[in-house]
Image 1: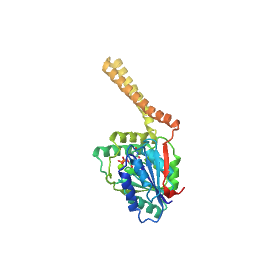
Image 2: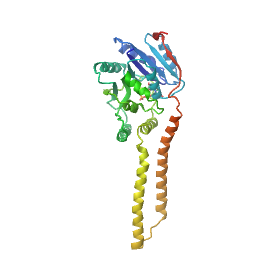
Image 3: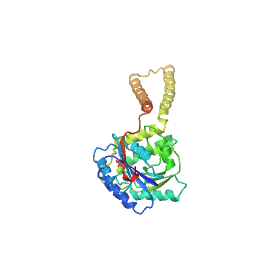
Image 4: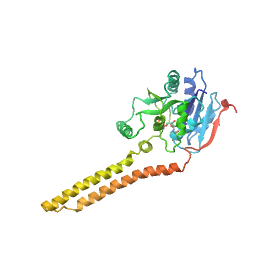
Length: 313
Ligand code: UDP
Ligand code: MG
């Protein structure tokens, strides 16, 4: 098997057949074997039924059927795990990423042996100014504090060679921030610009709040810099209070000025209380992740893995 297309699907009943046809059309003239590995991420609509229907077709189709919705990160992990190809492409089911680009990626890997991965990044941003502002900020922040490099606009739409897939699979951490993992494992990645299409049908599952949580996930997974905030804030506060102590003492002894108290004290108590609570919160985020990780729960649970007639018995 030369290529596996890994397709995470969550409530994509209308898109799945369209995707299948699009692949068949774009891959009509290829002279290598390829398979479709669909991961049904606990869809609540008829996605699974549609996927089963595709099994009757003449392409090798595998379905990893999750017991519930585990999220795209888990779906990608499961897809990579079940894939058999020498090359593996991760591609969305909604046709926002054209299958013909996956073919270009394969050709690039064939002709450029120095690369282990071809990743598509979005060059034209159709997002709102506010979202672009937050995303720019996030990438600046995480690149400053993390040793892992994060490329802005880079998507999960990528084609890997098998050794890189195996490296990614070795990282079985529960909190998966794939963009970081893909970069952390190393290897040579070629970035190519691509145009994101409109969704074929349905709506994106991302809201601003979800994106924010995802960004936090990235920060907590790839840097411990926030923990240092507590140390730095503590040192700064100590230095400032020593200076202030001198000021007060000199004012009293040299000039006999009494410092008015109530407002200052209340403000300082509230400020320091706020800072302390935030720092405890940050430590809590790391402890919570450590706690969940130590339980060693699986990244996903599959009810069944179905292979169609093209695989033989
Ligand atoms: N997806 C998934 N599990 C989820 C959410 C999304 O497998 O919990 C899949 C979805 O079916 C699609 C891909 O991940 O194939 C990208 O999702 P979406 O189109 O919502 O994200 P966007 O393209 O807006 O980034
Ligand atoms: Mg999409």
